[in-house]
Length: 270
Image (cartoon, rainbow, N blue to C red):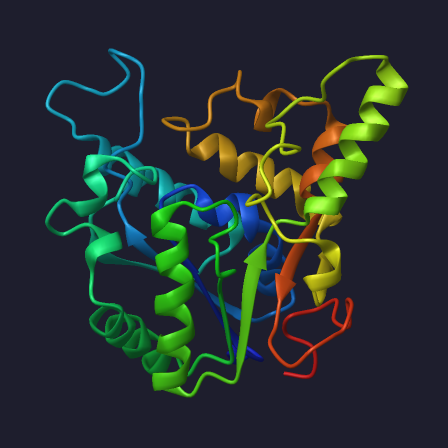
């Protein structure tokens, strides 16, 4: 039987286990279904996530569970290879864990970029996804993913770099529509109206990928991360139509594109 080579290779770089399915789960599964090779690289093993008492097995460390969950999510999303860079979760901004030895936040950008660039070269990556310059919402590890990802692409000569971001205006429109339709004072999920650091305005976004055909894969991948995304979380508790609105499009910024949204497929032409 003749083996068909993938058309292109997409490497998706993330901070913690579960980040991959929330922001890029759709583009990963879409690329896989279209015959491309997809690779997931995660900077940390999510050591500082939170779980309820008794959730872990006796003697089990949280990072072990989160690594296993990442592999389960990756299988759902059609990812061919999973790599961890080996840094320690830095926790939320302003916490003591930011400055702990081995934390991703304190890592040398150049050293971490060299590690990621080695994967990019080995895979001959055509496309890299990382995060925007504020990491979506100001998490230190997400900001570091931006810095490391951009530098690694320079080192490896990766031709396309897409910064995964949150469309702030899209969320605000959804919140307003929900409130009008239901008469509720608040929409499900985080209230971003008083958080100017949350997401980017739509005018800054240059790529919008319709992944509505893959929202079931995204939700299944989220469920694979049961240590962090419970059935009671707003991710999984929201109605299907609200989930499709929130997660059915994935948003990116690519330097040199725009103004406005000019791309709808990260792998077009490859």
